[in-house]
Length: 293
Image 1 (tube, rainbow, N blue to C red):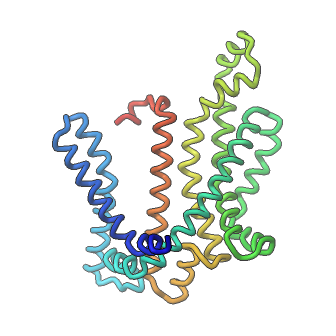
Image 2: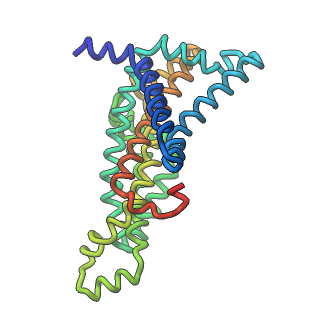
Image 3: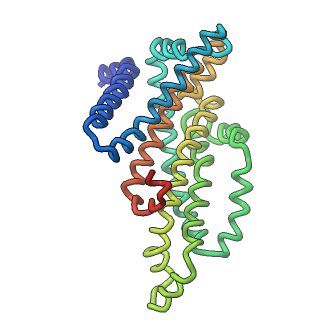
């Protein structure tokens, strides 16, 4: 098991590059033999990769053309070398950040759904608790980290709780909005048919709020990474945030940017997983011609 972990920590950049190249080659192969309509859809799948590659190429050319110092802004080639040089450290700390973020995100989803259902089903609770939620969400979470350290000490728990606190608010708001905006005509028809409030919420309200819910998840997962990195930077011995703090203290700017790239990759991976799940569960909600093209 240790040998497998060591292999994964030292070979993940090569595996990632091979996977991206293989995915591009597979899409290009499908584009060649596809119809005009399918070709357009496939080109949309290639667009993010080509735009990302183009952005890094422009970045590289500008850094070389203007002889920008690596200390000020390292070129993508310098960042790539730092990723390869520190691949083991980046892989280890990325894994630590990923599981802490997922733990906090999981808590945020469970708490957000429960509280969102409560607020959406009751006008009293909505009016009473919504100002408290807005006030709590307005507090910069970096100011809460020292309190969490006092309560729980330095370690993984402050990072998990910070990820939770920074990401549950959009879930609560969107779930509550989905329930609170059921058409009055629909409610009247269901009540006339003898449906109870619980039945209206479970049969109509919850399915109707699913697009809102998945929209909030795509926002919340990126916020969860922000929360965990903030806590790691200030109150942890591991994680991308801690790696960034060490790189900053050593004035190792390429490593600092390499850590940011690793964090971006983690965020994109979780975002795409959320999009995949959304398409499987709420594909029926995408009826607009804007979403189809």
